[in-house]
Length: 298
Image 1 (tube, rainbow, N blue to C red):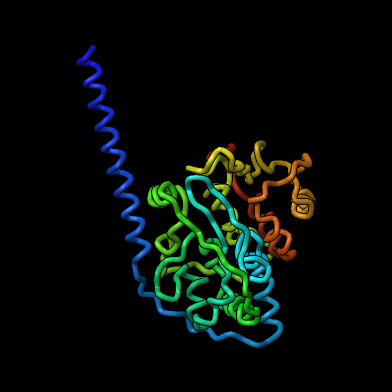
Image 2 (cartoon, rainbow, N blue to C red):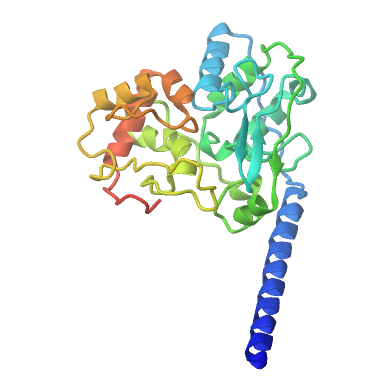
């Protein structure tokens, strides 16, 4: 028995060492990647003072880009809610109004398109890949609107990535290090807005971070058990099979499922509610064009 316990102890010790090495490798790789300087030139964009352009930028900030949502930077861009994600990370949309003046128009545009801060390093967790497809005129509109927002004196919090978050990022289970996920030489830009599946495919990128690449839902890898499980958005019986656009619109307006159950607070109901008619129709058309996929295949 002593030999058995000794052998078991050796196995446990080796497993602990292997786990420690695995954690160290992934955490070190994450830190090194976040320290990387990207050679991406600021975009050749200048903010406009045209009221129509600024209005378009405000719409984008409240919908597709999501800057002004409560779970992002807040309606006044002075800071958003704190979202606790257990051992993964603590997410806080910071007060950006006191940072914007330090950026040139081109640097702000680069942040929107490439996920790079003023110093050329990756932004943390900001869902740039959800909207980096915005065409240049929309990026100009967004930058133009940001230039009109007054400075807020709110004390801003900070996002903290924990050890598990770093590991999940390096294992491609979660996007925290944003810039390394973007092909900076070939960012795909959307066609002009239209109520079609082709445009909806870009709008639907807002959904893939939670609902998965195939939009069939399932638990987010590494997420704490307390976090809601994203639903199936494909036209499968476990998802949106049999849904009409009226059903989809009702869900957006009421923030509730067909059965009346409220949507989870992590669902970007604000962004959906602020989408215009073209964007909503495009999103629904795309979701209905997907192959029916059983729940949980993400």
